[in-house]
Image 1 (cartoon, helix red, strand yellow):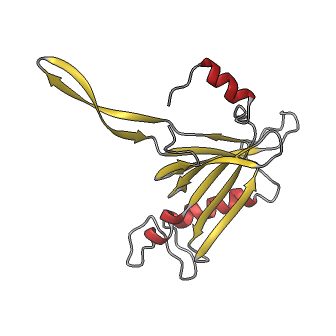
Image 2 (spheres, rainbow, N blue to C red):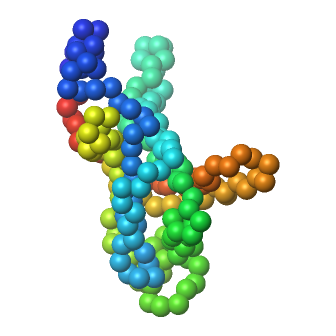
Length: 192
C-alpha cells in the first residue's frame, strides 16, 4: 500500500473521514464464575481508552563484526486501560471488582470457578479465552459503528481507585481499570 499526501487528503475529505478519538463506546463480555455465564456491558460510553503499544522485538546479531538488530517477533504490552464513568449505584465498578476477586481465587459460595487459579475444575479455556472487549469507533455523521478494535482473551487485573475530593467542582466521577489481553483484531486487519 502506497499513500501520498494527495491520497491522504482525499481519504480525509471523502468517504473515509478522519477518526474522531472522542467518539467511541465499549462492549465488554466477561465470564462470571459465580453465575457460570457471561456478564455483558454493551454500548457503554466510557471516558477514555488507552490502547497499548505494539512493537517488533529485535535480537542482536553480529555479521562480519557488524552488529545488526534482527526482528524476531511482534511484541505487545498486552495491557489496556479503560476509564469508566461512575454512576451512583457503582454498577460497573462493583461488577469489575467482583470479577477480579473471583478470577484471583477469593472463595465464594456456589459452584463457581476461579479461572486464573489452578484447581481441578479450572475453566480458563472456557472463561478468559472467550472474554472480549470491543472499542467501537462511531461515525461523526450518523452515529453508526464504523469500525472497532477487538481485544480477545481480556480480563481485568486492577482497578485504580476512585478519587473523591470535596473541594473539586461538580463533575461526573471516573475510575480506571487495567485489563490484560491475548491479542487484538480490527475490521481492516490485513489490508495494509
